[in-house]
Length: 139
Length: 139
Length: 139
Image (cartoon, rainbow over all chains, first blue to last red; front, top):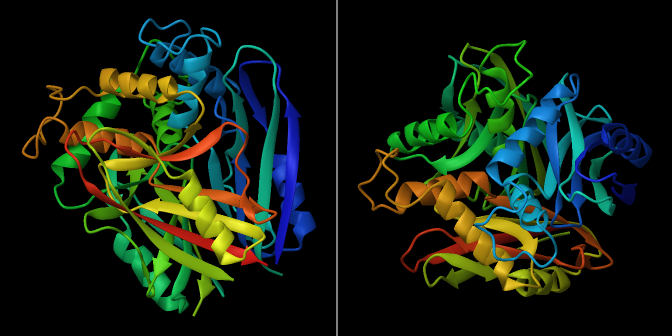
C-alpha cells in the first residue's frame, strides 16, 4: 500500500513549525499499520528536523546556535544577491534534513515520547513551503 | 515483505556504539534480498551516524569536533535546566541523523567496506536507548 | 516493485557532482509511478546533499563554509595518518548525508524547482565513488 499527500505551509519567516499531527493524520488515513513514512521538503532554504517538542526554548537555542554558526551577512559568502540570509539558509538546510523517513508501528509513526517533526524556515521573510508525505507498508 | 524489530541499548554516557552487526542480523532474519532497511532512534539527545568503523580514533576525533562546536555549558544556550550537556546533545542530534535508510542488496545492507552504523550517545550520563529497524522489500 | 542500480563516479577531488539526471533516469527506467527512491553513498569521506542546482556559487560557498568549520590540518584531530584532509572529510560526511530518500510522484522524483542531488567529494585527491539507487513503489 502506498499513500502520498502534499502539505502546504505558510511560514512567518525564520523559525520552526511543528507538523507532527499532520504527519500522524496522513499515516492514520493511509491505513498502513506497519511500514515507513517519508517526509520530504521541496526547498533548499527550509529544512526538516526531528526535535524535542516539549519545551520551545530548545528550538530557540537551535536558532541561536545556527545564527552563530552561519550568521546572516557572513563575509565568507559570495552568493549574496538574494540577500544576507540566503547562503545561511542553504547552509542550515544542508546541515539538517531535506528528507526524514520514520517507521510506522501499530498504525502510527513510531516517534519517541519527546520527538516531533518540524519544518525549519531559514529565510527571514515568510515563504510558502511544500512538504511531500509518502506512506508505504502493510495494513 | 515487511519486518520490524526494536533494539534496546544501554549506553555508558557520551560516545558511539556500533550496531552494524545487529542491523545485519535483522536484515538476514527478515528474508528480504532486495529492498530498504530503515534505522530510527526514538530520542532527541542521541543520534545515528554512518562512519568509518576501522579506526576508533575517527570517532574520538568526531567527539572532539562536536565538543568544540557545541561545548557543554556553552553560554549561548538558555535551555539549561536539564544540565550543561542537554542543549549540546540536541544540537549534535539535529546535525547528525535520527533516521538512516540503507539499501539491501543480495540479502545484506549494502554498506561500503569501511562503513558501519553507530548510535551516538550525546548525554554525559548513561541512558537506555531504543532503535527501531524496519526492513521492506522482496525475497 | 523494486529496482536497484549502482552508479560509479570518478571525482576530481574536493567538490560537488550533480547526479539528479542519473537518478531521474533510474526512476524512469524502474516503471514506478508512486513510491520512494533511496540514494546511498558507500563511503565515509564523500557524502550526498540536496542543494540549489541553479547557481554554482552556492556550492562554492558551501565548500568555503566547510573549510572554515573543519579545516584541513586542523590541530584538533589526531587521526591524521591518512592525510590532513581525512578527518575533515569524515566530519563533512557525518554533517551531511550518507543516504537520502526522495518521494516519487507521477513517475519522477518529486524535487522542488531548485533542488538537485549531489555527490560531495571531501578528499582533495580524485576518488572512485559508488552510489546505490533503490526504487520501490507502484506502477
